[in-house]
Image (cartoon, rainbow, N blue to C red; front, side, top):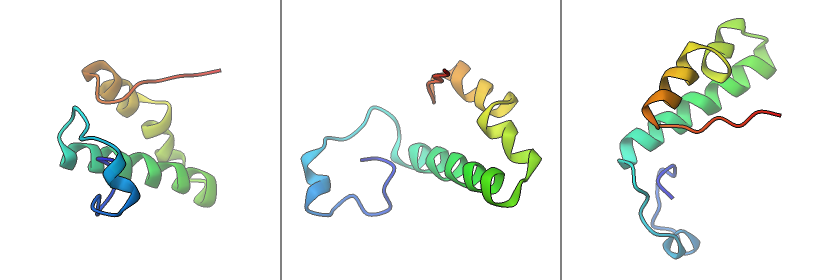
Length: 70
């Protein structure tokens, strides 16, 4: 549960520590969540870079994220 601000909740204790650094995982989750909402709620074209462009490709190349498309 590396993506949570406070992973000490009751249910969060059921999951083990992830393989990545917690701060890095949190930053990735915040970046992609923000980009998703900026794109869908504000129609911000710059947010697509995080969702389908160079930013997500760079993160995928390092193994920080995994891409899956339909």
